[in-house]
Image (cartoon, rainbow, N blue to C red):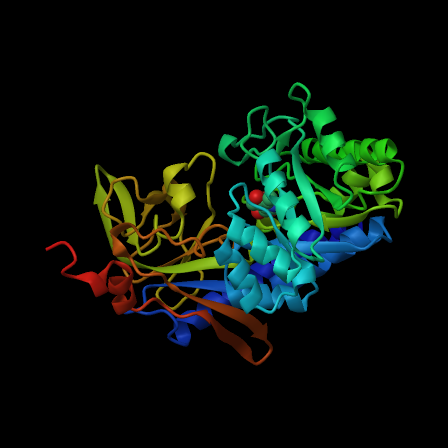
Length: 448
Ligand SMILES: *Cc1c(COP(=O)(O)O)cnc(C)c1O
């Protein structure tokens, strides 16, 4: 209850910190005519989110809980390091993500490797490091058989199941449909029996994993997915006559509110829904792993972009800004599923006054669809003004899309102190020379 009562205040405080950071980014020259786009991360908000996550589960269980942040959502080393300082681990799904987690100093015992396409080398490395691994399918389990037989490992090992509870409102992010590519499809003919036998034959298989996310999936459906995994764990343990499955990995997927500064639903709400739906999961018999991504970072990121030109076309005002498809691929390509809030600031970084005028907010890329918003009512943007693109801390600016060879913008963490806003460099703006090197610049004559 308390979190719901205080969340409007928390949202207003976050909005205030954001406004201070925008103003300071302009005043301190973080952004300017030659650096027309920057990304900002609210360190205070990220810390508070991590603390809220830990508190939400501590409220419903005394069992050990590892909150493994889904690195995919914000693959930036200083962010992983900050979350580590807040007691979170890392869920990784590729050699690159594992390298980022290791660079951030995340302990192997706080790291979980998922992914539907792990190579033998990746599996070997994970087992050598003692990182938890969730096998995706029978073929991967067979690879683990061989590795476990030949090497000593402390890695906790599990299997991912797809409870097939159905889709949310965004097909591309619905992981628990009848035909999803992830995990062992539990309702398919013979699958459940196969899973129980697979555990019975492998005493080292001690975890069970499911992830019924992501954005667009309602809490009751997510909880149904967790319930299915819990019931399966109970069935396995009954069949083998001991508590072989000792840990449930319930995935991530808490949806994010992109419509306002309120953080809803909260982790506390989800934890309560889980406890009501799956009480046995919280009675202390099972350790838990969670893998939240978007909900940990989304609301703490802002892209600040200059309006390079303001024009009209067919009577409609258009602000041509430096934030477009390169930092918001999902919104540009699927605007109905991924609307983003945009705020208008003036040339000095102050909230822009004036009546709302329907206008397009365009990005810099050379295709007509590169719009972050169409017909959006905002104070009329003028040349030299700024737009702030909100809730972009996860799956946006950290997921640069290199259309038009636009460089990756700098990312800066901020804290709003009484004596002013302090910025810390998370990622420097990409130098053009690096972009050339990534584009085969070292192999100029290769095709001659
Ligand atoms: C993407 C993913 C997550 C994180 O999902 P969010 O919606 O960002 O919380 C967690 N677990 C797995 C296995 C994933 O693929």
